[in-house]
Length: 370
Image (cartoon, rainbow, N blue to C red; front, side, top):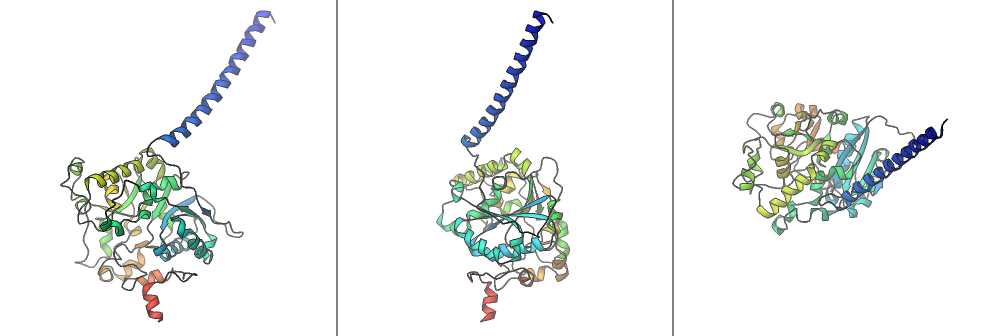
């Protein structure tokens, strides 16, 4: 081999080594910038680290694709969370992972209660919620303080609770699941849609409604269409609203579209401009969701969200046969199934597990036992 060829070979090897070094440095720079952006960009937050993960029990095995279920746990409603989780877990053989978002002062009570039930066999994570994340985004009006509970906004931040999940199910605590949650999780979301809800005007829900009962809801019931900011959006005031107490989220699309940031923007604008309807009761989480997901959400099977069981006259609105056939029951409204005057509370009773500390008492049970 000539000296010239040797020199060329050496130069080629040096060039290859240089390119390898540059490539590695670029990868390191990319990782650094990604971390730097997460740390400094306004509106981008660190994921909420789980405070506690359930121990894995020997002999208890649920394999296959994980189904993340997000649910919140307020101290005064802890019995509801236990009943809801119990119904989900025992009506499915799927690999369910419960992500329970709660306040720090509730975590110990929740851990103890779960340890005394069959749910101690389930996979679950207890995730502390930091209310400071809502600073500047909710009204400080003392007259509205009772209706603005920080945990109700946890659904806006699901990608932060479960950053590695691509899809998840969100459930309010006042639900009972009678079907296999896998079916709800498998809901097909259209391309570009970050969530699927059940519309308030869906015709299938009326199958179990007794004639003359029940009202449909629309956007004007949640938003003030006299406000310029709402007018500019070009939304129809009579468009069907949806109930966000149960939904399926495509978290990859959610992050891609910055849904959380969009929701926060409308929360902040409401604080400044009072954009929500004055007839709005306690559904303070619904208006920003209606804006962000207007004509941009998929639908879930209405039988997977049979609601208004907590409203006046629910016992006359739905037939017992329809309630039995429903895949998910939701006691949204004033009357809860752990209260004295709720309809179909016997279904909820089936899944309730008494509080080992004695702090939580279903009102009617406590009254009847005396």
